[in-house]
Amino acid sequence: MEIGLALFDVIFKPGAALRRISRNKPVSSAILVFLLVSFMVSLTPFLAGDMIQTNPLLAVILSFSASMFRLVGVLIASLFLFLVSRFFRGRGSLLGVFSALGFAHFVFILLPLVEFIGVMQGGLEFFVIWFRYIIFIWFALLFVLSVRESQGFTTLRALITIAATFLLVVILSGFVGFSFLALLM
Amino acid sequence: MSSLFKKVFVIVLVLAVAGAMAGIYYQFRPEPEDVEGRVAQIRLNGPIQTAGSPFSDMMISPARVREKLERAEEARGVEAVVITVESPGGAVAASQEINDMIADFELPVVMAMGDMAASGGYYISASADAIVAQPGTMTGSIGVIFTLFDPEELLDNIGVEREIIKSGEHKDMFSRALDDEEREKLQTMSDEAHRQFVEAVAEGRDLSEEEVRELATGELYLGTQAYELGMVDELGGRSQAVEVAGEIAGIEDPVSYDLPEPPIYRRLLGFSSRVVELIRGQRMDYELEILRRVESGLSPVLEYKVPGY
Image 1: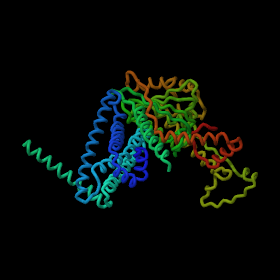
Image 2: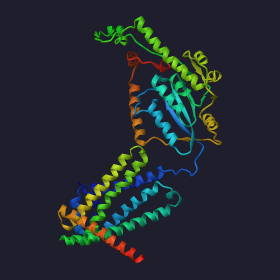
Image 3: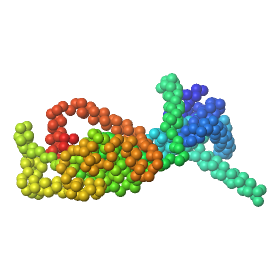
Image 4: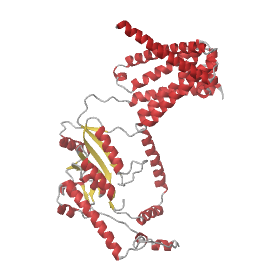
């Protein structure tokens, strides 16, 4: 599967592209795309700060570490989504969800462009803020599409799956947190 | 859509993002930790008018001056301001507003005059803490001008007949020759604006109104003459103005500080509008220029302006 073609289609024909990605499961490509985008997005704030001037290597290491942590986060999120979607009779695989989510992150590549406009123009903050919102909403839609297409769900069932997963993660986190506190007390 | 186009699109997008990141890196310049003793530089060029054009830098309006002063006040370490002024003057109320703004400004302000800072250009300078002019600067022109044209003959020549329906005795006074009473009224108005000019200069320059009235003949003075007459405090350029600002603000080692450039979109808009002005200037022949001036005479306004500019 061609990464370039898949990325183009994620932007312009997201439904069909994510269906194809979740079927073919190009896991290594998804990891590559995710890491590249995540690294660029993580590095961008450092570029407008002091650290890149004083300690560029540290800025790069921190950006890469953040990308790796996010990758683990996406893997865990994929696992939970896969498990919950099984409960809702989903037909997809874990690697299918993970690949789709990895490619869906491609839209975040627009964030450095928006930040660049923000740095250069100085007086159109509202434009930058709104554009950031638009990118996050765009990603949210791709997230729903990833679950829908990878599990063969309807949009409603995909939304319910995401909400249930979110709830499950919150409950589990609370449970783990309280257990940890109880151990400390 | 061909697969080649799709691949090229994605590659270009990624390269554009990488370029943007490089742009952020080069645009960002960290400020030193302890900035102090800065003298901000502000430039005011062009005629003075109340309504500013958002697309051109070649005019001075109260809104633009306010924006620049606010930016100077908010900038880190700025303790004084030097305003380089290059203006033949302009609208009365706008000049007065800018004069008040400079008088009320928290930080010391020194005006550095360029080739010309006369009439309204001098009015807005008068309330500064000090004025520095070049020996060859044209300044002064303390006076008021009200240019009117009687269009009757012009309209007759080009064969245009017109009819004026008016309510109010003097409503059509700018559309025909003035009568004696109207001429007297406009003269009174002009005298009053002149008195206000004299008063503002006297107050700003710590001179008596008598002294200013003697200078306020509408004549232009060279920088050296203005210095001898007490209309400016020092002779020199912008670096001299920075030194003077430093003395007033009590800065031991004043550092000239250029305020950050305006946003790129505004610079681009300003440039694009100048292209239009340039083309228009190239295409405007002598007759059209005369017509433009006649038009401005047909919509007369009281001005603190050097005639002919």
